[in-house]
Image 1 (cartoon, rainbow, N blue to C red):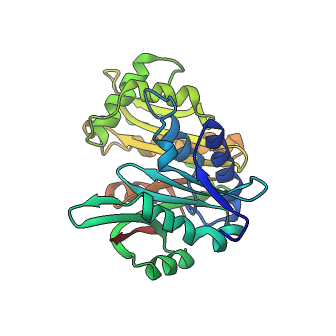
Image 2 (image 1 turned 90 degrees about the vertical axis):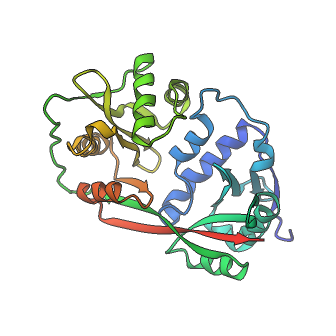
Length: 307
């Protein structure tokens, strides 16, 4: 590149913390959801029963740095191949197209329809939409929603838990709680992949995790009926709901809503100025978040290129 900015592989845990610092730094100066929040980045690294360094990351993640070593851009992979860009806004005009070109060459995956790459874009981000259109991407139908609530002087409702259920925080180091969380998440999201070890790693290793903000509704038989986690980005005085889940056997009782109301009160007491939550197209989840009182809604879509 002729800008004095060069790219290199993601090489060490030191790079993990450099990326995290970039996410914290850019949150106040970018649109909501433009870059990942720290919970998503922390979870990508540490929400795993075996949180050891994975050598594959050196090929999956690319960093862009100035001549002085300042990190200003990241391309990272998630899941089965979705590609994400993390950018300092002052440098996007210099490196964004180069980042996308690198992703097309190195991160496109083979499908029955051909090689393809998908990038998520919020509707407010006209520059990226124009850039993707120029490079042959098409907007998909599947969408993503980010909501924000600014606390200010907003009155917060008192939480009311359904009869027979108990609201409590998860217990540090409690293996029984780790197992109940995994069981509840598998049931809530119709999965089999969750296990106690991943939650154990997350609670021990993630800087933004706080047990006093990790709340469950316990059923009369001791099982977890609902779980609402909140992380806290202290530097930006921002809280984030993740995850929000309820076991199918315990839905329509207002459990998640009660946990979220309590979480709002605790986050504000910590000094949070705002709280956010993300979701996909699911109608029940979006109805729940509307009922909580989020006033800002930002929608994004996947953009796909088939080679």
